[in-house]
Length: 231
Image (cartoon, rainbow, N blue to C red; front, side):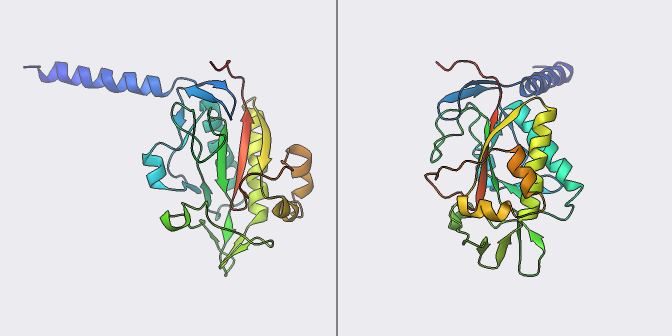
């Protein structure tokens, strides 16, 4: 029978090893459309001003990212908290622990893609989390109109602009770049009318191509991190 001392040592070594493995820097391969990742980090399900789109998605492991992108995402939420302390942000899907095909997405394969659901206000002007659940495909089936409205919710474009700029700032500080932002072309015009609209256009590259799905309820952000060749 194993003594309690040896059992304690075994448990300590096991968790120390697991913790060390979890803290290893990520290695990405290929690109967002054909790639994989090693040592991906799982984003927390919630924080002071944010939450994941679905605890089911978190449990299924659909919120893993490159270690550097993990830091960028959390840095940005911490930064925007200073200016929008009452706002509730929701992030969407990111990718598998080992990367690879991530249905139904065409990208999200090497830990460098993150979906962020648009911040919204209710009819009273209060910031609330976008309601994401099984009935609306965890938020992805929500459809905003050309004025950024859905039922009794309206997109908070000012908060969205602040979050995007916080992502840019955090990426710069971590030595990485934002390749592109994919967001509905018509709603982009409303975003660019905000107080930070001009700055957004100068600092970030917004895709002008019509995506295969509308991207009105979320904005997709692709990052650039040096990756190894995918084989």
